[in-house]
Length: 282
Image (cartoon, helix red, strand yellow):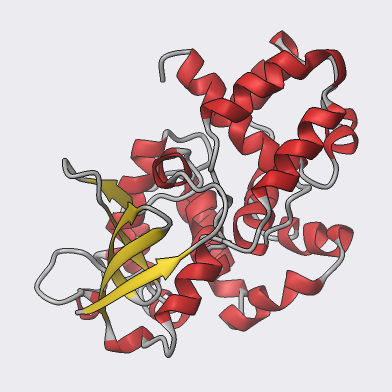
């Protein structure tokens, strides 16, 4: 077990960041601490002042040389939330009151920088699914690999591409519905996880074209991967909640919304997503 204290500057709301639907393997306990599965292993984390106090139970498969640097990057602490807020309010025009309410509701929410391969599989699983079902399906896939168990817990690292390629038949038996075909196609076509990681430097058009060339990856899934893995902060994944926001609250939608709040429209989308779901009692 490794204990870490990670300082940060500026706004940060751990709850808003981890409960907003961008990540699927975090759970909050009664003490207010969060436990999650990341590439280095099982992470227990709580905020104390301007520090994150973390305990890491690592796994030898994914030994990280600098877990502090890994977590700093994961929570994207270098991102300037103050500049984001100022920009949104400057561009909000006569909707300033609405956007102030949205920003205040989730003040300190940060877009995570998550592992691209895990995010690709997770968001394929998200198609026509609730968050609860996505979580359950990710755990079903992960538990196919007992060698990935962390310590004496019943929690598992997310499997590698190589591991998944060797368990195609087991994946078929998980009853994932039409998503099973999409996931298997993705796994079989991808040569290495590096191939996916390498698109980080592509232009939007090239990245989008590459992702949507895979069976089952449409615009929304591609945009989720781009925003939540590659920190493409101008990308707006549009689901039923965002469509509802456009219809009920926003004079600008689609491309107009993206252009209006560039280069932070994707970050703002996540604030809107969390706000409107809460507003509807979800």
